[in-house]
Length: 473
Picture (tube, rainbow, N blue to C red):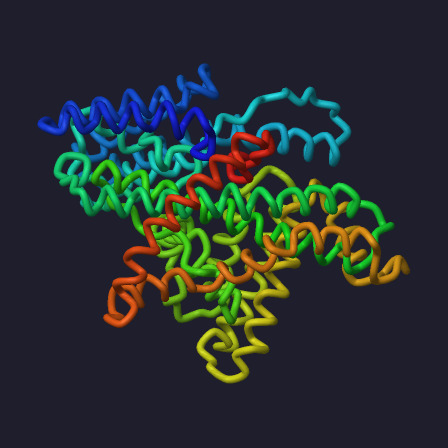
């Protein structure tokens, strides 16, 4: 079930909210309702795979109890942590990476092993990482072990973050599960945040997806002009940002409606002036997870030997690439990010303040090239598409198709580029701090939100094209 679907907006969400506030007198009743709703939300699209998630919840519940009991016995605790990682990552490997691994074996050995067609459970990477962080946080003492199985299940399966994040660390959410307060301010802010995310997803991301999908379907061959290839790359750059940041906004807004506060997951990454800064602003919860549970335990950047630091970065970015998908394109994409971040750290490029416009152009150039590789189904098509972008096949620069897409989608490109910048944040600040404009803006803002919601609904009703990129992860 998509947040940006009629059934969610007009059936599931109103029903759950109504029941939730009827049960407001009891935290236990509210949590049980949210758990049932979350399991139903997941089972709606994947009725059998809900069993996989329930198994993950039960395993991690038991591992957390054991690691809490044997925390003072280091060898026993390490054994439990190791078994927990084997179970969680083993399950993730079977569903997400086994076919890829068998294909590599066949290509390099000629064994001809049978490659099973295993469907990928929605959100398996996210609920697996939630389970791992829960057990490790209990071991570290970053939150008391939860002896109520149903509350552990709610932490891992809570529907706003279930299939696309943000990735919530247990120590951030543990107290909110049993001790949170709803308020009208939270609810109103959550509704506005949700509708803004809905607008990003339905109006901007979906519109850019039409352009990107059409051009990328041609760009795997060496026969499209450079302007069209660049237009497709820019369209996908906007699509993936508004797709994922919009979904994160909707998740944060939904959580606020139920009294929870999630951390931010995006901070205008396309204004970055280095690749390092970009990754401090993009998918913040994933970057934080890898730092907390992989990078810092390896020693991070605070090591005396720079070779060790580079090795740590290589491990992190190799894992980040693989996390996003079982294909060589994701591995190469991760390694490209590693290479530029390593160079920036060695040269202290990220700390520089001169030539900011050029630094921004450099960062966005690398990001766009990376997204082309990320979007391509394999390295051959990625190479062909990049060749088209740089005119390596003699296909010229301009085409009538480029002009057609620019005319048809000019408004969406302009709005997409504008809203990659912190315009909305500055408007909110103006409304709060600017006495001269606060009253007019207070009247205009709710009207704008209502109109935005109605426009989004009209788009959803008349269109069946509603892709979501991060369901693949």
